[in-house]
Image (cartoon, rainbow, N blue to C red; front, side):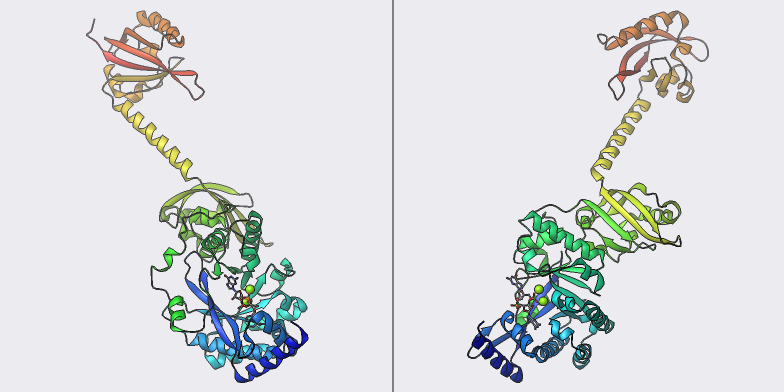
Length: 511
Ligand code: C2E
Ligand code: MG
Ligand code: MG
C-alpha cells in the first residue's frame, strides 16, 4: 500500500471505529475425528463505503502502526465475548471463542484488565475465551509476555499460539510460554496430504506440542484429504473451509455450529487411511503413577483407533481388558523397575473389539526413588496371537482325537520309550494310559517278537518304508499274550527329521 492509500485507510478506519462498524465473522473449529464444532474463531471484517471490503491483513497493520489497534482490539474482544455468551448452548460442551490479539495489545499494561472487563461485562465464562497470540508478539520480550500470559491464564482464559511455523518458530517459545493450544499455519497444512516432508514436519510439530501438554489445531483445512492426514498425524482440532467458512452471526451459522446427531459422521470416516502413511504403528504412552495417561503418540490411532487427545487424561485401566486391567496396574509398582518389562495383553479398540498388544513398560522414578512416570510402548500383535491360538486349538483337537480314538494309538521315540498313548491301547494291555506313558515298548512286547520290532524300526527310518505293517504280541498286565496288528509310521520334528514312531494298534484273535 502506498503512503496516500495508507493515510486514506487510516482516516476511514478511524471513522469506522468511532461508528463501530467493524464486525466479526465466526469460523468453526472442530475436533478430530468427530468433526464436531467446539469453538469459533472471531475474524474482523470491515466494509467501507468508498474503499469496499478491506481485508484484515490490510487494515490490522494500519491499526497497529497508528495505535488504533487498542481501540479496535478492545471492540473486537467485547463483541466476541457478548456474541459467544449469547450463543444457544444446547450442546454438552459450550462453544469457545478464539480472539486474535495483536502483539501491541499484549505488551500494553492494561490488557489483562481489559480482558477481565470484557468477561465481566458479557458474563462469558473465562474458560470459553481463547486468546490467539502470534510468534512476534511473544518474541519481543519473552519474559514480559510470559508474565502477562500467566496473568491471563489465572483469569481462567486459554492461550493459543497462532500461525506456528511461519516466522522464527523457535521450539524454545513452546517451552517458555504458558500455552494451551498450538495452531499450525495453513502453509504447512496445504500440502500435508501430498508432500511427505510436510507431513513429517506436521507430525513433528504435533508430537512436540503434545509432549508439552498442548493441544494442536490445523489451520486452513480445505479438503477431506488434508483433514484425514492431520488426524492420522495426531492433530486434535481443525479449522478451514472444509469445515466451514467465516460467517456473520446468523441462524444458519447457529445451525452449522449445532449439527443434528448423525450429521457429522459423514464428514470423516476414520477407517479410511490417510493419503500419506507415515504414522507410526507403535503406541507410546506416558502415564502418572495413578495410571492417568499424560501423553499418547500418534500411533494411538493405528493401535486403538483413538486420537492422542482422546486418550490423554483417561485412565490406562479403562482401555485394558477387564480381566487383566487390575493385574496389569497392580503389578506395575512392584515388578516394573528401571528395567523394562514386556507382556502380551488385551486392549479395547474404538471399534469395540479387543486387540492383543505386546507392551513394553518402564517405570521411571524421581530423585527420591518414588514412582514418577510409566512409559509404555505397545504394538498390535493380534494376527500373531490369533495364529498361535488357532494352532493351539488345532493341537488340542488332534490330542482329543488321539486320546478318544477307539483304535489303540501310541507315540514313542526312537529309544523305544512311549511318550503318549491312548486308553484304547493301554486298556488292551490291562493298564491305564498314564501307567503306560514313559515305559519302553520292549517291556510290553512278548520277548520272542523283539527282534522283528528292531528290523521294522530300521525299515521305518529308511524312507522307502513310510508305513510298516506288522503282526506282533504284547504281554498283558495279568501275563497273558495279546496279539495285535500294528501300523507304524514316523513323525518328523520341526526340522523335518524323523523323531517319533506313531503306531495304530488293533487287537487280533488270540493265537
Ligand atoms: P488468522 O488468525 O490466522 O486467521 C485465519 C485466516 O485464514 C483468516 O483470514 C481466515 O479467513 C483464513 N482461512 C480460514 N480457513 C481458510 C481456508 O480453508 N483456506 C484459506 N485460504 N484461508 C482460510 P482473515 O479473516 O483474512 O484474517 C487474516 C489474519 O488477520 C488473521 O489470520 C489474523 O492474524 C488477522 N486478524 C483477523 N481478525 C483480527 C482481529 O480481530 N485482530 C487482530 N489483531 N488480527 C486479526
Ligand atoms: Mg488466528
Ligand atoms: Mg492463523
